[in-house]
Image (cartoon, rainbow, N blue to C red):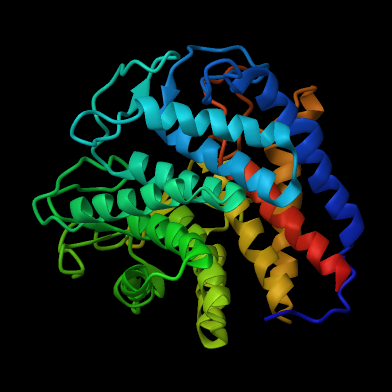
Length: 397
C-alpha cells in the first residue's frame, strides 16, 4: 500500500528539507545529548532523571525506560547501522535480564545504578511489556532467538495478569480504577508488540491474540455515540456506568490509531487502514486546542479537557499523518502534519533558548520550565526514526 509517487513536498516543505531537519534532530541533537548524559556506558542501561542541561537528579534506572531504551537503540542499529548503538543495546539487554526481575518473575519498577531494586515490583504490567518490546527489537537487530523467545514469554505472562478479573492497580490517569478493568493503553501496547513480533516470526497463537486485540480496539473500545475510543471498559468489555464512561484519553487514542495503521499494513488490509485513518482524523480534530494550538491529552465528553500538554501526544499526530502520506493518497494528513510540525517547533522546541532538546510537558500554553527532572528516551526518538525512514522511502519513490 503506497501513495502517489509524485509527492515532493508536504505543504511548503520539500521532502528533502524535512528529511534533513529530521536527520539533524536525531543525529545532531537528541542522540549526542543522551549519549553524554542519559546512557550508562559502564554498567548498561539508561538514566533519565535529567534537567534540560543534562544535570542528573539521581542515577536510578526506571524499568520502563530500560525496555524502551533497548527498543530505541536496537531499532536505531537495525535501520541506520552503527556498532556503537548496538553495543548500547547489548549492554542494556544484559542489565535488564540480569537485574530486572524478582524471584517470582515480577519486574521491578526501578533499580539503582548498580542494579539493586529500590522500589517494589511494578503492578501495572507496562514494565514487562516495554521490556518485551525492547527484547523483540534486539532480536530483530541481531537474530538472537533467545531474546525473541523471552519477549514472547513475557507477553503471555503480562496478558495472564491483564485478563485476571481480580487484577487491580490504581492507573492514576483514569477517573476511577477497579479490579478487572481493561484499558485502551494496555491494548495499545499489546498490538504494538504483536505487530513487530509477527513481522519476525509466524506464530498461530500470537496471530489469534492479535485478532482479539484488534477486535478490542476497533469494536469494543470504539464508542459509536461519541465516535471516539473509550479508555476504560469492564472485564467483559462493557462500557462502565461511572465516571469512566465518557473518559477519552486522546493521546492514547491517537497513538493507538497509528499503531493500527502499521497492523493494517502488515496484514495488507486496505479496508482496515481506511477505517483507522478516519478514526485517527476524528481524534486529532477533537483533541486540537483552537485557542493555543496542539492537542490535549484527555477529556470527559460531558465535562472538560485535561488542559495540560505533553510532547508525546503531539508527536503521535506527526507519526500517524506521515504513515498516511506514505501509504495513501489522502490530502488532509499533509495539512495536519504541517500544522502540528510548526506548532511543535514554535512551542515545544528549546533550541531558541540554546538548549538541544524539547520541553516534554507543560500547561496549556506550554509555559517554559527552567528546570525539569526527566528527559524521556522513547517517544521522541521513535517519532524521529519512524518519520525519517518514511521520508527517505518517499524520496526514493
